[in-house]
Length: 326
Length: 286
Image (tube, rainbow over the protein chains, first blue to last red):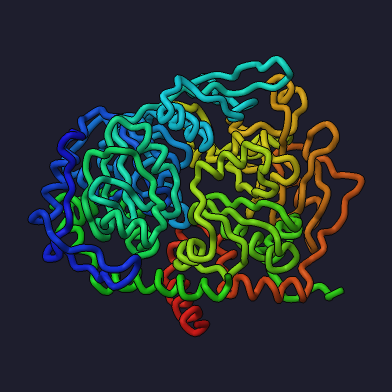
């Protein structure tokens, strides 16, 4: 797929969005007739049973548009890798897309415990591999570097050994280290603040995104805006997280909603409350049909314009206030 | 010295007690949804540790050098606008490497008499009775931090402070267990609860070293799921002073720290009001 890079700019008609904040105007030269179809064809490349790492963390900058598309396409038996999981992980589990979950932490934090994650694990419906955050980082770094394993000071003295890849190794000086085998992803999916058509990404407040992308066989990038490399050089001092080639770059404004995407919008607390209450009280089918099953344009239309403005206003206000405390 | 404040609650006391642990030039970590920890760190930076560095991992991957007031919806933006972007991979390399991290309070699912921490499961691992959120950094922090890995417990009770944890996610202070595991460094330094403070004795067993003001020792012993030893150096926790409270009100004017003491349902019910109050508060501050 890398020979025919798929880059899609959003056409403004299909999405209501206030583009006056953040890094400035994205280019609007449309190269397609809307991103929904392109997002669908990029996600169609992800096969049932694939090992998929999803970027972002907690309720921040998850590639939610792509997650919703995975659900729409009724993907099954995924091995989901969620280092610091939130709604993206809970939603994929709720929709029945996940057979095996590799994770460091899964929570809906202020909103409560992740309801579908808990239910699926406690009933034995999905297989789990619990990592610590450091061991998972090292496992992904080993894949990135093409190494069979990496050492880390993880898990020593715990009860994890029968349930976790790798094992402690005696260093001969009274100290042990954990041998962490490489974890190779079939796909990494990340949502970037900005990306060039080639897939160089601006990723601010970065968790595992780059490490996952570098070690994965395939990479799908969604982004708030596609920009030229010259803009990356001028505005961001050339600071990008990249690998040389990615499979697809698709511009999806508000593509992280209901999670946040600094510097454009905060997380949508009221939507996250609605989700967790649906998922905890047997209403997940209603949530899925109300927001997800139709298409991404319908999702974006379902999010009230006033709500969008509020999320943008809060982010702008946060940025203004913060400057007083530097 | 400023006199003890007569107007404070347990959220104020625990924030200040945690924050007093922070020294200047400490590296502070805040894990997932831990408003009390975040508040204690910002408070310490504003109060007595101006050169401390905070890594508010719960909000984003950044280093923060200057304290600012807490909120819920503005926090991530304020952190990234005010801090230095710092990818998680670098944070973890520092945790494991020489700079380490001096201060990270963790809220455990269970902690036992030797300080073993459980964030994983109650019951069978593959099909548990209760599935916890997961290790996050705890398996590593118990091996890394040399001075201040603190457990904090907003609701001290026998189901949290247990005789033996159902699952050891992070190893505690039992010297034999640590030696057998080749765990050369680390351990739990304190358990701060809403009733008092427990610290490991020489044998690694947690004992009661402080009671909070107006709390009876018997009540703490009864609320603990193991036979709690009372230290011969037992003292009463000094309450927050007027001066400490003044800084706390500046750092957390909307009392986000109190969310730590609510159930999830209570937090969801309280959030819409907080969201509108914080918009109002910060609009008037610019």
